[in-house]
Image 1 (spheres, rainbow, N blue to C red):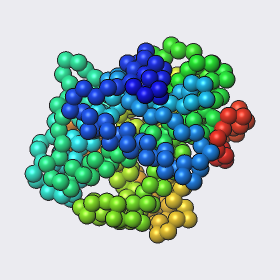
Image 2: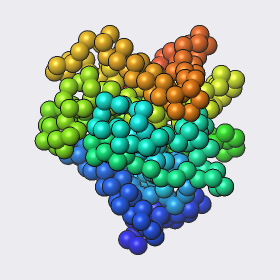
Image 3: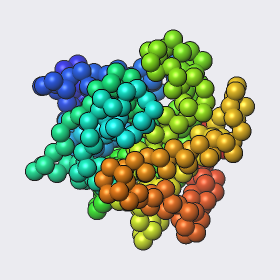
Length: 367
C-alpha cells in the first residue's frame, strides 16, 4: 500500500479497512474511484485552495459513506456495499420491462424481480445474508448505458455531499467539539455515539445536500452543452434541461427513497439527519433554484411539475412491480404541517450555524 492507502486503512480499520479487490468487482470499483477523484480534481482546477481529500473504498457491505480528517489531511470513504447497491438498484430498474418503456427496446428486458422492489422501502433489507439479491443488468445497450449514467449521477451526488462537509468547515467544527470522529452519511437506527446538537447536525446535512445538488446541475449543464461527451444513444436524454433534469431526479429521488423507513416524525428533532423525504424535497428545490439564469432553462413552475412527475413515476413503477399499489408515503411525508415546519426551521437555523463554521471553512458559506 502507498502511505495514503495505509493511513486510510488505519483510519477506517474498525469499519473493515481499505477494500482490496479480490474478485470480478474490480471494474465496478475502478469506475467509482476514478469518477470520484475526477470530480474533486475538476472543481480544484478553478478553486485550487480547496483541500484535496483522499478517496477510497471501505471493505464493508453496509451501504454508507464517511468524511473524516487526520491532522491536516482529509479522507472520504465510500463502502463497498454502497457501490454494489447503487449498481444493483439502477441496473434492475432499467432491466424491467415497465420502467421507462420508451427508452431503447424494453421488450427485450426481463420480468421484474418482485421481491427486490418490495425491499426498496427499507435499505436494511438489502443486506439480508440468507437471501441476497441476484445481480441483473439491462439487455438493451441504450438502457444499459442510461442506467449506468444515472447510477453515476447518484454516486456523484454522494461524493459531492461528503466533499461539502469538508470545504464548508463541517468537519473542522465537529472535530473542535468532539476530537476524533467521522461524519457518517447513513445513520444507524440506534445511534449510540457521542455527537453534536442534532439540529446543528441536520442543518449541516441539508447544506451538504444543497452543495451536491448545485454541483449536479453544473454537471448537467456540461453534458447538455457538450453532447460529444455522451454516446450517441444517450444524447436524446441529455439534450435539454427538461429531459436531463428528469434523469437526475430519477437518480437522487431513488437514492433518498431507499431510506424511506426513516421518515418518522416521532423523535425527528433528536435525529442526526433530517427525514429522507425532507431531504428529497429540499434537494429538488435547490436544484430548481440553481438553474435560475442559466441558458434555455424552462420556467421554475414547469421544472417543479417535472420533478414531482418524475418522482411519482418512480413510485408508480415500484408499486406496479412489487405490490400493484403505489406507495406515495415518501413523496408526501414532507407535506405534513409538522414536517414542513421542521424543514423551514432548518433553513432558518443556518443563520445560527454559520458563525460556528466560519473559522473552519475553505469556501465562502452560502447564504
